[in-house]
Length: 213
Ligand SMILES: [Zn+2]
Figure 1: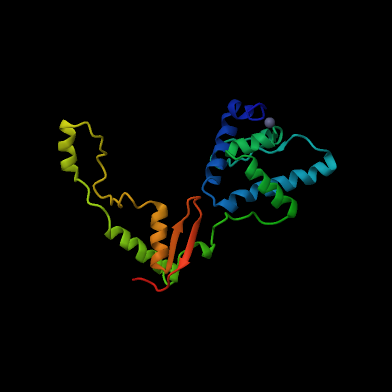
Figure 2: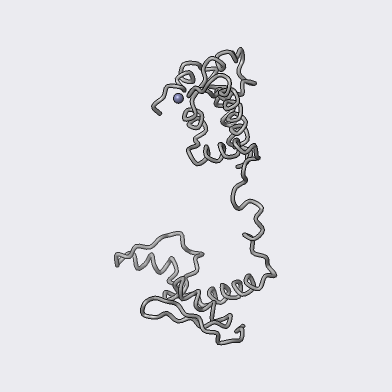
């Protein structure tokens, strides 16, 4: 940080405690809730600057002094901080601030995180795609390769230099020819589409009909 807005925190232990309390509690809030105070602060400083003129140090230090004895709110009022310092306190950056500004300028509520409550993101168990995928993955697991057990590998390790990881006892190994692409083609075939790849890498799907168990 280039500015010295936050120097007051280093100099004044009660300010430091009060700011820490505020920021700590804020960290437990939800994505949208965390934007709310910033939107209000932004709107307040914008409205004041219409009468008083803009200043780059315009925000109050966010404080919760409920557990700080003899706290002097006057110190907070007389030590305003700039936007960068405010964001630095919360570990937020430009992206966050852009969202806050947009919401503040439109007078609207903070935006929720992209996928919150988006039902289209959830797989429903009765959806035909879900059923087909489930059957496909089940088949994949059945075709899993048998690998040497940990015991055998350890014995081998004694004589030949083979690196093995020690904690993979429960892992299932898919056949080595089963890459993501091959796996997808098998899935398509099970659903009636035969996929083939041309030399240039272009994938063509051909309807061969019928849905295989
Ligand atoms: Zn500053």
